[in-house]
Image (cartoon, rainbow, N blue to C red; front, side, top):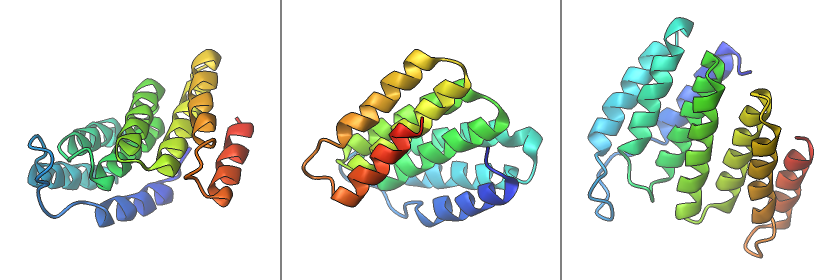
Length: 163
């Protein structure tokens, strides 16, 4: 699990990736609302008993971003980590899987693979070995892409192999 200092480091990463303006390509996006929700979530991270609430706010923040905004998958993955830290592995797994789908939608195979691996870890910790295998296989299949650099292919393969 992620230590409190790890959550603070993740907070800084997530804040740095927050979008500043609306996307013309996705009329459902509301970056201002996403930033408000994100800020609310960050303010709760100092209180472990409020991590589930913070994770929910992060998930909602990601949902208010355009699907082609890299911050959408990064924020959803962050929500997954906070859900996991709060002890809700089911919601963590779903957030990680959503992050993977968001990354795939914009063609980021590396981000998608790592999010699938995170989802597989959450499924494994829940004792759902068949779901863990399925999610790990999704990550492994992404390594077959000729678009993936060899270093990323090897790193992803090593993480999948460690499951």
